[in-house]
Length: 122
Image (tube, rainbow, N blue to C red):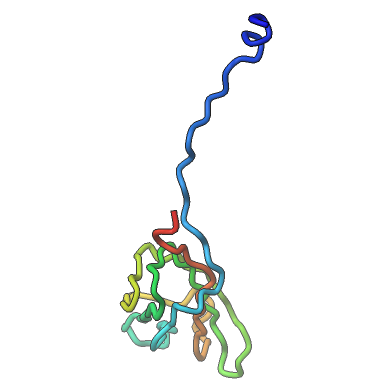
């Protein structure tokens, strides 16, 4: 009996560090007044505002910016990471957004939230 107990050994359980919950296409986050500079001769950089209409904070936000020509055809796109946290009911402004090289003929840009991490879910 004593030999059986010694052969079993002991098990060590360590708690793991919890992580945030990632949300795809969060409906709480709204892009307000998007304006990405299209290199049309103006030196003014683009600016967008992200408003959090929900009840939780979001961080690690990924945005997709699609550049469209004047006919509405996609001429380029990119994914941008936002390093700021948006608290419930608050907004953040992102400035100095510029179109990618080769999209100077773009007529407008469409900006969508791809994903975001919900803060405080761990």
